[in-house]
Amino acid sequence: MQNRYLLTSVTRIGNLHRCPFEVLAIHRERWESGDYIVGRVLNTAGCLRQIELPTGRMAEVAEGDLVIGAFGQRAATLEAVGDWRAIADDNCFDMMTSAGLFGKITSRSNYLPALMPLVYQGHVVTAGEKCRMSRFVRPEGDTPLGMPVILIIGTSMSAGKTTSARLIVRLLKQGGYRVAGAKLTGAARYRDALSFSDAGADHIFDFVDIGLPSTVCDPDEYRPLLRQLLSRIAATRADVLVAEAGASPLEPYNGSVAIEELAQWVRCTVLCASDPYAVAGVIAAFARRPDLVAGGAANTAAGVALVEKLTGLNALNLEDNKSIPKLRQILSRCLGKTV
Image (cartoon, rainbow, N blue to C red; front, top):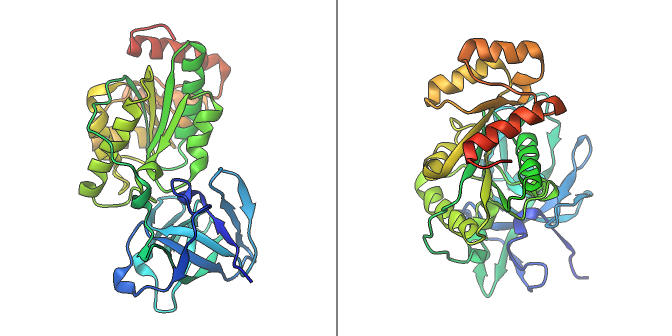
């Protein structure tokens, strides 16, 4: 009986859905981040048991299912921390994100349900070689980005970055712009990039497109890959890029590298913050003053007032339609063209 494999969204850049492959156990010394791995689901009781398919659709799995994902690292301040290198001799690991980021959880918030456990069945092997995400990344030139950037950064995960980015994409499209949307840092989950498309973005990208299961990696590895991604974005000839740096610039996701590489093209920076004091903290720690503060810190008039008192910055509740005219005004000023 032929095995049936469930592919997660980290495999979307490859051709595993149509290419014959083997599953072979490989000695641990040859394991690397970005390797495509087959894991057998050990248990689904009381844990997050949905996976994100290459299309972005969510699917529920059952005990015994064979799932293909990729080794990587996660360092989420509010949810979970894990690393494929922490996998013990029993070869058991966790589904660290629904997109198929595989590794062993070493720290987890009590507010996050248990993550789905799997056991290593082997590496995906084609033509006698283990299959890695990087195999499916086409080389790009070093073309400068050359388009204005609306940069969305945050004080942490779940600070409102993707929600803010969606709204900005929508307003830019209403203003007649051709828009590229990109999530440049974070841990693999296709749904964030897809939400930019839902909002009207003409082109969408994320770090999986350059062969990374997450951007928790050495900056010297991330920087040249990011430049390849920016070259690919440049080729779209979009009018503007709405770029989200997942997590915060101070976390180990290489957000600071992404900001450095974008710096000459950034025309507007939106800082999404969990609370007003976090705004002051990021400004002090990162020496960067945004054009606008959004997210949880601006959910109420009291929050807006405190942000302005602490920092002197504009803060807007972007989920309140009354804020839209002010947001349009800020974007128009920054881009030098009416939005």
